View 1: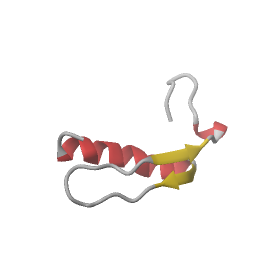
View 2: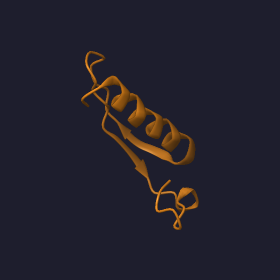
View 3: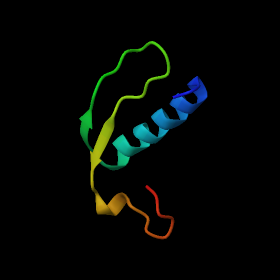
View 4: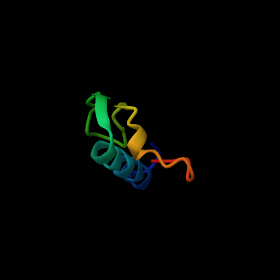
Length: 55
């Protein structure tokens, strides 16, 4: 990511995803810079809002 603000915003979405879906994969990354861990969730239909098109 380019800035800490961008990284933090993405990490908020990842945290929300962990509450609403099942975490399938999260790869640790170095804590220097603005890296975000590659994160994959399994599909949980009940957490998807089709009207909004998001989680």
